[in-house]
Image 1 (cartoon, rainbow, N blue to C red):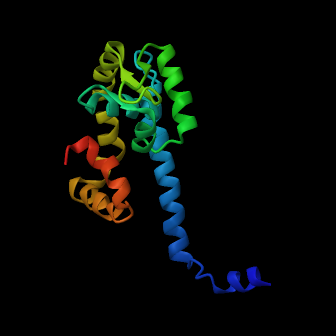
Image 2 (cartoon, rainbow, N blue to C red; image 1 turned 135 degrees about the horizontal axis):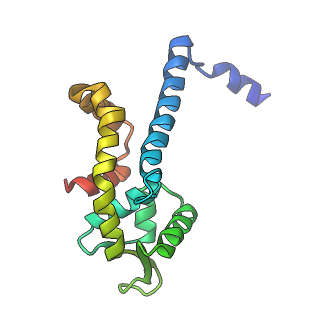
Length: 168
């Protein structure tokens, strides 16, 4: 009975809100798919968007490395998913996994020279696709407005994951 009462009290989305929600889901999923395809379809790059983001995060670190747990937070992956992705990247020689020197228990992902080289090759392609699929279609002002709107959804705890890359 309690669940029936709960259902009746839910403020359902009206038609406009439902359309906005579906548009958000469809568009963000399609955008990530297109950005990933751009990287994957280039035979010289062959990276998923998730792999690209891992290389970016490692390259932005002063040491070129990050604890696996911190990296998982930064790229919004479960630890398990990150472990599998990093293992694939390690087989390609793009990253290495090492024991943490600070405590000996944790694992650290380290960007290799090959990983840095591939990132330098992939970055221009990625930027072109971000511009093509997002920035050029929205225009700079709407693009920045979108960031301001989405920033309202970011918790203070998660904010450092975004600011890590910008150095703010």
